[in-house]
Image (cartoon, rainbow, N blue to C red; front, top):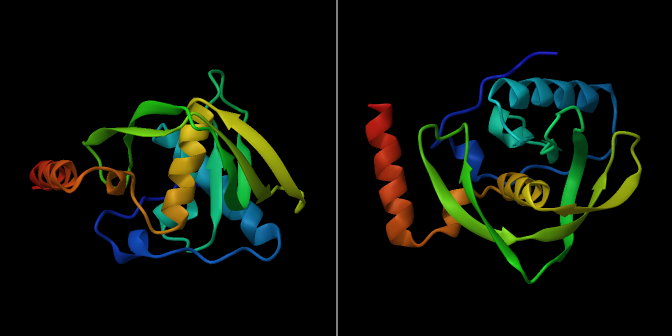
Length: 165
């Protein structure tokens, strides 16, 4: 298990949809393990494989207070989302130093392949739901700041560029 380097924005892979996972094998388990190590090293509450340059629809999420409650997901998809929104300050290790307040559904039901290779449906609420949706966006080639107005997005990207130089 190894913490991997997150690819920097504007790497084209961050704008590319990841490929579906057909089976849960040792390679997928090893990628998940590296993703968990990477997420813990940040520290963060979730990570999509795309963020470390692996173009497969894999994500890990752990929004628990005590940690160690990681949910491993392959091919996650939102089946249902609450009408009620929840604002949260979101960021990404792919674009360090900046963040933005994003509103997403407060609760979601997600279907995914779990670590046993079985299709599972799970409800996520609060920070868990925010993180799962954030990771699913990454797997579709979207960044959190794509949910901002053009003006706010441009300001955020200019600030990130200044911090980088």
